[in-house]
Length: 195
Length: 195
Image 1 (cartoon, one colour):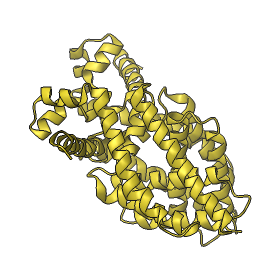
Image 2 (cartoon, chains in turn cyan, orange):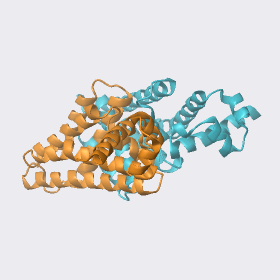
Image 3 (cartoon, helix red, strand yellow):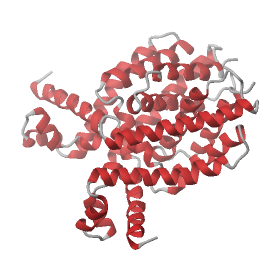
């Protein structure tokens, strides 16, 4: 990795932390120049504009999410074990990877009313993730872990809802039972999907 | 209602719209003075500080939520009908009342890492709401709509998760099936709670 790429990585690593703690709107050339002790002009040379910087941050976080949450889950056996692995990794991602938890949860509500390239990218990620969950669930139908008439997209919707409730209970409420409640909710969702 | 109170109402009505669309952090004395065509000093006289203004906005939105979502639901028969009424009103609240949907969803992720009076108030509201759901659910246990060993707090956690997934699907993804998916998820949650 060349020096330019190293710098870019270091900046985006900081940017994902900032986005996690104060939101993606807090990721600006100026705020990053301050926290990285770099010149604004140097950051402009790397990223060009605030929107490009925010987009690069979303891409970087997406790669992290794929590497830490999705890829390791795909190593688990097909069907229910793979769903459980994905869910466990996702809880871990929202709990321990970034200082303010999953930055996509915050970014989704920040940008849902703001048309533009950042919003489009967030929508794209979200749809991709729901499709990944649905695909893994379909593997579980083939394995006969789940009913043939179960709806994979509905499962993805509900599993995603559990994660969002977990985020709110653990982050906002500081609920010590958040993990236990999330796991029980997944168990109930899986029970309702069995043949 | 005196002129001072009328002005206060008009300002807070605008503030909840702003908070819904761009977040509670976008609610400042300056931004409201602009959108209301009032003087900053006049707004300072009413609210004193940005934090007091944000707190007043949360109180105002909480009153709206109680009047539009909770109170009408309490008029429905106890148990399952009351849960369904609450859920229906809540979907309506997130869809049609404010320009960017439920402002509490956005505020929760904005303030979850920011200690202070606004965060405390949001936590208080959230805990209250979960307790209200759990209490209505307990009424359904008494009516034998739900199993005696069902966990009312777990039900509240999962019902809340469905609303959060609905918010994301309808607001961010523009998913035309969002309402249908949310209603199916509630049906499944109620089915799993029956004796």
